[in-house]
Image (cartoon, rainbow, N blue to C red; front, top):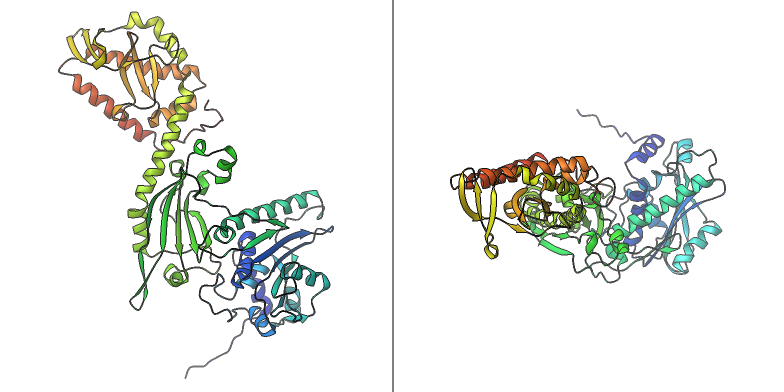
Length: 536
C-alpha cells in the first residue's frame, strides 16, 4: 500500500531560497511594471529613492483597475490564481513576489479596487516570516506617505502602489551608505532602468505604434520615451526580409508569429550624430529581439545561431508572438527567454537569416571600404617617393599605350612583344605615380599592374579584407606600409617583365588565387578601429 505524506515547504527556507531565481534589477522592476500594464494602467510612476542614511526605497504606482481584499490576497499568494487572461504579461503568479524579494526584504502592496473605497495594504516581510516560520502575510492600514504616492498617480480612483523596502541586494557596501558614491550608483541604476524600460515597453510608450495601447511611464518624474531598435523612421533603414510562418500549437491547431529583418543605416547615413548615438550601433546590439504580447522579453541575441561579429552590426531581427505560443516556445518564469523547437530554429538560421546577414554584411563592408579608402589617401606617399627614385633601374619591360580609350598597351620584355589591356590610372595625389589605392578591383583581387602617367605602377584594392585587416592597422607605420607596397609593386613589375601569350592567363589566375587565399587567411584577424585609435 502506498503511503502518502503531505510535506509543505518550510516557509523561512523557501521564501529565502526564492530570492535567488536569477533576476537582475531591470528585469525584476520590469516585472512589477508588467502587472501595472496588465491592470490596464494608463499612467505608471516608478521611483528609485535613497534617504540620508542610504536606505533605498523603490515604488511603482499606477492608475490601473486596482484590487479589492480578495484579489490582493490572491496576488500576494505564491502561485496566484487570479488574472485569468492568457494574454497578460505576467504568467505564473510568482513575478510580483520573486522579483520584489530578489532585491528587497519587505514587499508591500497598497491597492484601491473601486473609486471611493479605502485602500488596503498587504506586506510580505521576510524577517517576520523567518521569525515566525509561517506563511504569515501582514495586513494593516497604509501609511500617509503611501496614500500620497498612490494618489499622485491614481488621483483618488482605482490603482495600485508597490513598495520595496529593506533593499539589501541593490548596492555594494559603502563606507558612507548615504554618501556621494552611493548616490552616483543610484543615479546609474535609475538611468539603466530608464534605458531598459524604453526598449522593453517601446510599443506601449510610442503613441504612434498601433500594435499596443499607449502607456505613460515615468521614472522619478521623467517621462520615458520609446527606443526603437530598428530605426523604422529613417529612409535608409531597410526591411530586407519578413515572414509570418505557421506554428503548430497542438490538437491540429496552428497560429502565426511575425519575423522581420532590418538593416540599419551606417553611422554616416544618419541625419545627425545624436540620432546615430541613439541607435546604439555597437556589435553588442545586433541580434534577434523577441516580443511576447508586444513586450520585449529577450533582446539582441542570436540564440546560439551565430556569434556576434562586426560585419553583422547593422542587422537586427524583430520576432513577435502572442500568448498562444507560450508552450511551444517554452517561455520561462522571468519571461526573459524562449526555446525554439529544432525545426523553427533551423528554419530561422538556415533559411530566413542568411539573406539579411549578407545584406547587412554588404552595407557594413561598403562603409568600411569608404573609411579605408579615406584613410589610404595619403598613406602611400612615402612608398611612391621611394619607388619613383628606383623605378627606371628596376623596370623589366617597356610599356607603350596603343589606344588609351580601350586601355590597350604594347609590352616589350625579354619574352618578346605582347599586346593586351592594362588599366590606365590617374595619380591619387601629386607625384603618386607608382602606388594607387583603389576602392575595388575586378574579381576582388588584391593588386593589379597599371600605368599612371606612363609610370609602371600597382593598384591596391582597399576593399580587400587583407587591406582592411593588415594594411589599415599599420597605416601609421611608414616602414611597414612601404614594405608591403614594395612587395606588391615588385609582383606587378615582375608580371610585366615575364608576361607572354602563353602566360598571360596564368598571371591573372595567380593574382586571383593569391587574393582568395589571403582573404581566407585574414578572416579571423580582428577588425581595426576605423573611427579612431591607432588606425589613422
